[in-house]
Length: 258
Image (cartoon, rainbow, N blue to C red):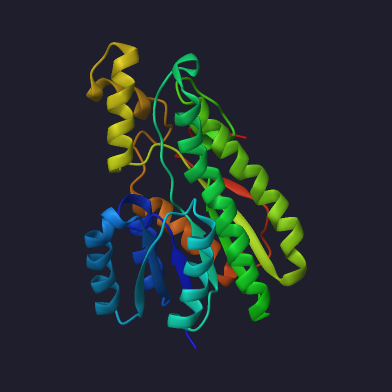
């Protein structure tokens, strides 16, 4: 029986690349995003099915506990099992600490940390009931190791994911469930386009200059492509990583060295 994976935030960028890579690896794929991205999800579903794998679309807000619980159970109902759960959905905005409102703080934390927590929790419940172990994987960031300016709410959420990943790994090891996270740096996506555009408001420079400055700080001298991250997530989802848990691994071209 084929293994099945759920990928949240799968309509574009890294989530899309991860879903397609895992399909190439032979997994059936449940793809999630918010309702407004349904068209993109349907297109990805068709692509996965053309590759010979089963796929379902599951629209849900990852910050909604009931919706996440229903989504996890539905993966088992439709695909037969939940073997890999990837909490990839995330958002980012740029603003100085003293300008961030409490509502803006809550919005970022709701998706980036509460959403990951709910996916970890509900996936774990399903995997424990299955009794066959599993892989839980979260989206962290290089900023969970090296903070920067103008994104304190985003940075706090990613430090939270790093700590949550360690705690969850310790609790779930007895069930043969591993919990790890991937920590991207600068990845060429629509999200990074919006982020670099926001940086121009505070740095008095053009978007091209902002991007150039980021790339110059990367030893490999290029931004990541979504497939660079998907390739690593493929490893975390595979049996090759069975003896690895509680780790948040930086995949950023050498920008942050620990």
